[in-house]
Length: 145
Image (cartoon, rainbow, N blue to C red; front, side):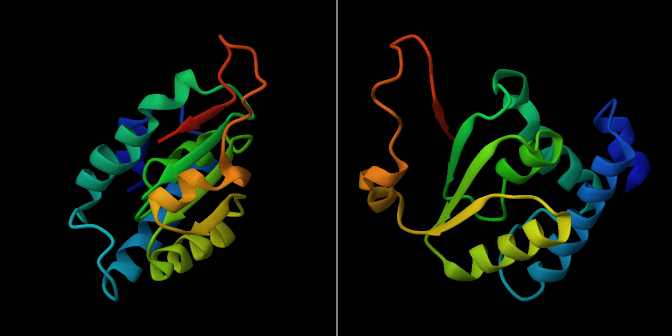
């Protein structure tokens, strides 16, 4: 797994590599008890979940606020957070059991994100999670994934 990660994601630090391996191990373990993903082969997980999740990384400034609505197993938010822990991420899902999995992932990887149990339409109406409307028109404060 480590070699595959290093080949697919160039310049991956040892610490980040360790976190991706731990994430993969948790994903496979929990996937035996609940349906998190149909993709479980190491090469496919690295390419279709981890690497694809990182496509937005160059466009996210440090400290960007991100809501991953319908996060499921944590894609793309967790891989983004592994490579940029300054991101302010809110993981939103309608199933508490998926959020329980994500809380375990965050704890194990020593990452910080808020987990919110809500349906997308309810989350979007909650003023607590709406973007700051006072921000300058050309500058985004928040990102919705």
